[in-house]
Length: 526
Image (cartoon, rainbow, N blue to C red; front, side):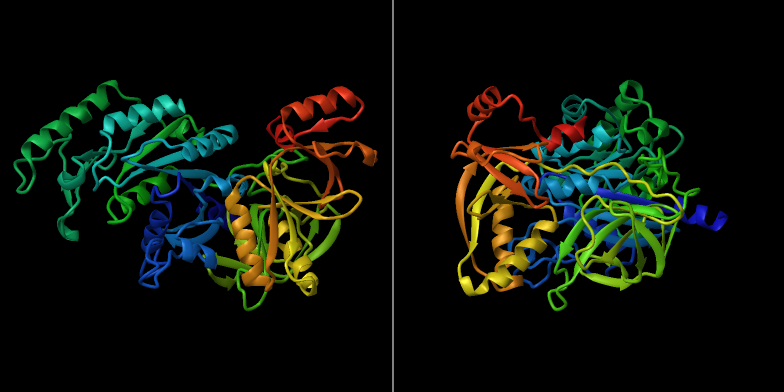
């Protein structure tokens, strides 16, 4: 047990979140470089060179240069096992990101120094706050011209409504970027310097002893004034507040040039939380004391197109995983044996024999699992808190272009729907397929994958935006279905209505007060 406790305490599992193009995937790769997980980072924009981001494995990601799925990467660094979950920044893939945030212990938020807090950053921050996830901020692209650091700090506190504490402070920016004044390690880290000359130590007063060649005196004096202002008027650092998600440590740097990244990683690992107890139907589950348990937060088909495989991403919440162990699927009460499991480094995967609470492993899935499933060992079963089911806003009718490809069409649509990014509905009466998603890009990814992974071209007919509401009724009169309030069944055979607009929804409720309608997202937030 002591050995298990030490292993669990060495785990750090976090998600990297940001608005698109803030440098999220680039930072992920630089962290992997320090962890020795990769030797050479291909930038996400490197399509012409044939280099792609390690965390972008899907073909469409390589073509477009964007992340559209959450990737998991694992490496060891200074006695710590690090699990990074790189999430899509694009808002059309926020469902995947939100579920991923249920599986981590902390989050790293990347902000573009020129743009400050952007819309998607704010959305993801709110999800972290709702869950009480500690957040660490990396303000990126300091080697380019951007907003003034004090302005960025004020924006962070005003827009996000949370206290911040700069662990380091930039000296200049853009062409005049000299480096960072490190408040935590009491040193200056130079931007352009050989490894052995990179750090300038500071004395007890936080100043450089004597003169230093190459340092702009005016810039140095300005930095000292700003740091003095932070010391006197800024927030105090508190480990407890960081862990409770009430204070954000802020780091400045440049992911692309690999500056400030290692300093960030070293400091982050000191303050990021280890796996903590998680709420379940049986109360809090202690990561060390309880038998093996965890939940599935993501399912991905065809990670290896050669094998047509499905992987369930599984967060271990307590105890120890051992390959071949017997577990129970809480949803069905069915006993299972976990023979096939894997660890991740983006598209590279290795079989894993052992893993502990905090780790993310992949379980090969033959169609058994659903997103949100809990697996447990030991005598009693329980379930972890429900994962959010998102309410789609955009809808299309979908059918196979070639009627002879129906078998491929049905296989593809059923597998891709199980990943949770798009939702499938069937009309009542004359059965036709309708897809729902939170963003247009989801449909484009679906069409691309059906053609490339299932050899099936599809016809998609836009239905526009609809308001989806589910009903608790087991039986619903089909005559209630109309063009303004279409009756459908979801893939679990539950009834739902797709309303044309708010007016149609209100009119329906007034006319049919006995039919109870609900929005799954409202239930989750309660």
